[in-house]
Length: 391
Image 1 (spheres, rainbow, N blue to C red):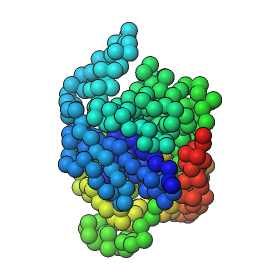
Image 2: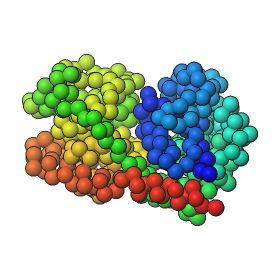
Image 3: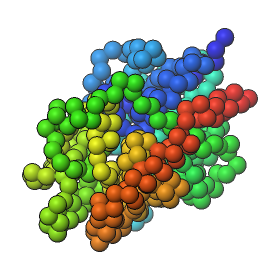
Image 4: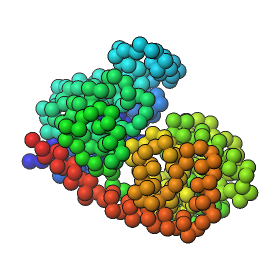
């Protein structure tokens, strides 16, 4: 009889393309070959509001049972911004202040937590994704003795809240996505005694690929372009990216276009060379990566970045934010990209990549080898199995 495994994650579904949520879905689907896997999640689709979107309480997604629970209330973003500001500015902040922050951030679902509390004996192991959210924070407190935490942690202000200190000492095992994440968590929480592995996420390439030229024609794209893929948000560094790009464009007559893929939650500059495509299929995304000269990842806070790995798989080098150790680690270990700390470095690095085709090609080839060597599913799933099979 197969062991029964539950995954707990804040959002889940084919329409959910956030990094940690997508990682959760891919790993759950791969592990379902060996275990009876269920997903425990909310009915939310939009991470900004956490409003209930999915109607069914039980749904089958790619062969897996997904149990969806109501969020108790949508997030009031204005209220959250206010509480966020107050929490950080309060010099004598305490646990109760941070709990109020957690409640305001969401997604709050006591239905999910109560289900886990009452039914945890049905599961041999419970895998929690992302340390930051209500579902992981309260869920892990219910069953630490059979839990595996995939924290997707990085150096951001929230991780230093006092409420998270005990959380990182609770799970039976921890799965890190990169060596940089492991070093950061161990140095921050001193929890080296907890069994852990560095597993990462495998890269899935669709069998039915779109001809890159067809992709260009479908979106009426002409000429060279650099690419950004992900949530178009200030927290992802997009506002700074727009500023850097427009300044770069003023200084360079043959500046390539900037193509954006992903949902926008901030205003995009009205410029003819900044081209937002919105949400696209995986096949269209991968075609864009093949056609791009460079993929730019301006985020300071990444725990892995599947987008960077996918781009490297297609031999497209990357330009990343130097303040993100994980992204810099990919560039250095793979010898597959450059990194910048301000506009001057952004300008210099982008000029190197644009003006030196042989360098660009060699970095792309290096990156592809790096991904194929380090992010194969068989090795990753074996690491998860080793933790699941632990007594």
